[in-house]
Length: 311
Length: 240
Image (cartoon, rainbow over all chains, first blue to last red; front, side):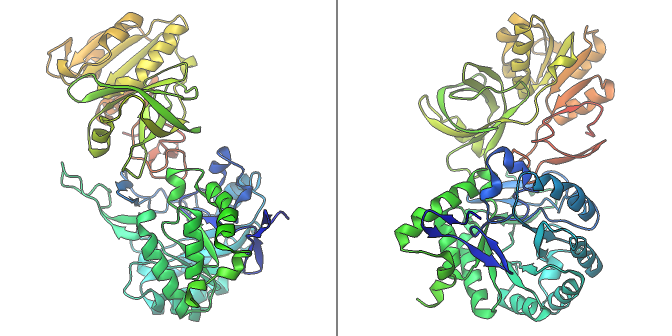
């Protein structure tokens, strides 16, 4: 297994699975992975978090779903996906042809039953080494974010999904709460194996000519490099609150951002919106890492997880 | 699909709000494909149909509709611009023996490149180009050389008074297949009138290459991404 870049050790481990580096494209910004194989050999990636998947196929929200912002974008896709059966039988098969590593399945839902049945739908998929529970999607009515803001609901939902799934469960948290550490603790009590954060921040843009919100469903999730400091702060806070491994994300656009996120407490780092403005974003980050490690005197990336807490 | 740095050769106004931007250093692109141009100070790239292409030189036609396109008017010869090129599926040029090209407003841009493609294949296409008013007309001389061109204006200040679809209903055009690009309302009336053709759609996009599902539309054969399965769709497939 080719896991060391130059003389620098970029490997990290998540739930017993070794990733050759901590860089993982974030759910919703990388499709089902194979689209990016047209740009570069995606086998360099640590892993991939798949497009959010629900029990049945969903079309999502009407157009427009995207609004440009000064340092990012607002999206309100509404979890468009072909449903868990098609993801396992079709999308994972297509991905397997161009990506040899294992991936993270991202699971969305509107009810306890939908979350547990969708998560269980990945039980037989060897390609999947963990399930990421999206309890924080701001773009699905009556679901998503509604699940992610009440600690009691989070604890019960995570416990139910843990019972239904044979995979390690990562809980993806919303930043649209008063105290994100309360939700992280609830996920830990529910039996989560890891935490990923942050999902998008609620946002809105308004067309100056029409005075209507640009997004069809008015508001959406803001992401992109503008949210990076918000994400670093929240990863740092959650690191202090729980003992679970953390996958940090939010505005990560460079190798420097990856190191900063790991200093804050992340064991792995997801790159999201950056993929949409530069299809080579993850590739560039992975290639920049060894030189940056050299510059910072880092031999092993696992040595730096949470370093800011000891400084 | 390519990520490229293009160099501005020229950037000039054609009308009060429409511009022609010529860029050098572009890999070959097909008629009907589009490019994403990154304007300094703006996060997302802006999608533009390929308006013409020859020997590495790509022409895009754009209308100033917001801050991003307004900023583009400041581009000068020699400036560099980041681009994703060769995006989307182009027109199915093999489908027409007697092509009819129907444009509305800046929708004429990708059809200009398509008309040149047909001309180079020895086919003289019929072009119906609709504009709001005489002062909005672009590409009049260029298209007249290589196509049977009819211009329509909503206010009757040039050519036929009315829109391109109303022109087609009231005049018999000799064609076996059409290619259309323009405002959604025009394409809606067109596809209700005749489905023997294909339409190029616009959308607010995130990535431009199929990753984000930002531009998905519902069609008669399920959800499709304008950037990936499109921007050109069968007229019979779209729901407008």
